[in-house]
Amino acid sequence: MRVHPSGVLAAIALLATGRLAAQAGDSLPAFNSVRTPVSPAFVLLGIAPTSVERPNTPADLAFAVLNRTVGPPGLPKDVALEFSPYWLVRHPKLTWQADTIRSPLTSLARTATISLATAELDTDASPVTGLAVAFRGTIASGRLSRETIDRLRQVEASLTEESEVLERLIGPARAAADSLMRSERAEARARGDSAGARAAVARFNATKQLLIAEAQMSPDYVAAVDSTEGLLKDLAANRQGLVVEFAAGAVWSAPGGAVDSARVSRWGAWVTAGYQSPSWSFVAVNRFLTAVSDTASDVLDVGLRLIHSERRWALSGEAVFRAFTGSGGPPNQHRIAGILDYAIGNGLWVTATVGRDFDPAASGSLLAQFGISFGLSGERVQTP
Amino acid sequence: MSDSVTITKTEDYAVKPKTPITLTVEIGEGQVGGTAVTWNNTIVGSGGDVTDLPIGKKNDDLRGTSLDCTTTVKDINPNTNNTTVTYTLKGGKQQRSFTYSADVNVPEARAIYSVTFLLD
Image (cartoon, rainbow over all chains, first blue to last red; front, side, top):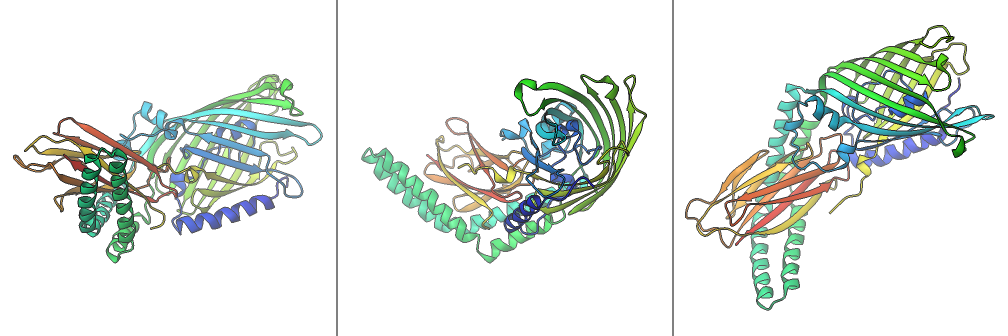
């Protein structure tokens, strides 16, 4: 077995679990909705825990680490950063209703990601640093189900009720503060004191903050929030139906980690198609990977993956057939793996892979990987 | 409710004498939310879709009154924690849109926007 779960990873996971659990209670994400998918850059580097990854849009910014170290636990060396340009900027006109169905171009824009990954390749005696850059995008990303749309409309009505409760609770005190602010502002303006006028408005805004904070502790408001949360309890804004994703990228290899020695060593492109239902997903992938200096290792992969997912976990099995397309290549190979994903926090997933890799005679062909992935969108700096 | 973020704003909007105005509220970023609108101490409209809500009637003089909006946005979009609300007022001396944004600190949290328009 070439991989050992890292103590460092475990510590990170435990720390993150505790922190995130404190933030989000028991509101864990659904596998279909917010799981950070395996970075395509990891696929190009040949270190992904799965060979048949389901199309899935990550958060605006996602970070993944894998640990394949042999022997004592250490810091993971395989790291990927993936970001979605579309979701890194604001979209004030994009309503949830407008995103229930996507045209191919719209889908591509909203799902395109760029990923960067680095990994230590080859052996400790002859280290090679691999750097991969990859792109992916989905031209068909399914649609929100009728049940999900109906539920979101109920949530909308419940959030409206929350707003109405707040309005009723703060209304009288706010009206009094409004009158005071208007008179203070008028006096300030009369004496040409624009700073004083602005200060009166600032005090009014601060008063509203306090009134809302107090109102949020009232039984009526708490009941309204509980009602909304009840509607959301089993809801994941999953997209269902046909999904088709394209991905492509390249790997630069640097023997000894020397910049001058870095060369494009590998590139690849693939298409992934599948069908997603609430609990089951079927995915097929057709992928071509080629090595620049050694056409004998050019490969064409055809793979299938069947996934059953629940809110906290997902279990899947995959099979990949590999044909070597270059002359002088080895015989055809196959890979079979089982993958378990488990949510240990909001946006934080543990992935375990067991099975056999393509070349059964090769060292490390017994798959036993363990990794974590997490979205960083919850850690963004709050803006005023 | 410590997970929620509250944004309070106050803006001026110049109205025409004895002329009603309309309010439209758009909730962006693919998030879900609902708004309650108060004018003259009465809730005059609410919902997830507030479009061209009339404020006042013909010959009502809106000057010196306040239009208060509370919008609660719930982060349901797995792609972003950002929330954005745009309030558009029409029928006054000019059409104006006011756009506010805030990131929720925790996925699936709320952003509460409390916006007062001083009609003068």
